[in-house]
Length: 139
Length: 167
Image 1 (cartoon, rainbow over the protein chains, first blue to last red):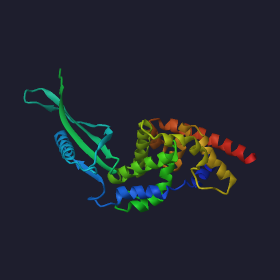
Image 2: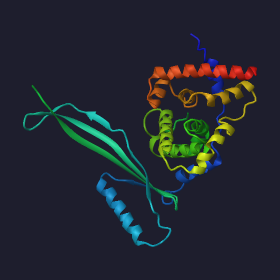
Image 3: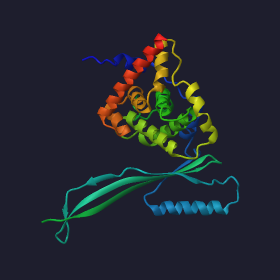
Image 4: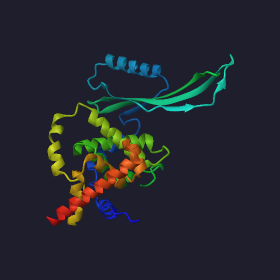
């Protein structure tokens, strides 16, 4: 069977989308080319909320104590929680003879902070991995 | 699309794919500046964190673009000056390079006139290089709905360019 839309689809594919301007490439270069020590983007990996909170409190205290006008003042601009990945495992027998099904839930929390003045960003990724047991009733 | 999993230079990959990615961003945004913002944010996220993930890199980068476009639409702090140029932008800036063939020029103009739900299917299929199954996943619709929108869009485009070339 022939596709009646083939000619239109083919003509569409021959159109040439306008390329991004040099300004876009320059902005990408600022984020992707600059050495880690100067890139202005700080990636902080941590596995617990306590570590994040401690880092933020430390930064806040540090910035609050310094009177330099150039000191970054981060504003929270984006918060995101990824869709959780849920895995169910085979039921297991507990010490008391009851049964439970282990469930593993993994997701990622991301917060992005920006300082417009210095054009720097703080991106905080927090991977979460929890294993819980769902009690099963047996008859 | 070349393999984005390999350790290649982002400039080479972007030079090859930037135009079509920008078109995908453009049809989900209200003006040229917003499209550039979405493209930048989505590409940086894709290149830094997602290109090594298993799966079709096309689908990954399109997901990243859609997420950034939706984030931008939800944000309420867009500058007023930028909002002001939206109307002019839609009229004056073309999405494609100029075409000498009047039929192709009519087709390029007609794409913008399609309903948004049909246009996004066309753009994702032709320039996103996605299947109807993948388009369905991106847009949270069934593959049959995606295919149906594609057929309606082809019909509409055929009518548009026939009318334009007979004027």
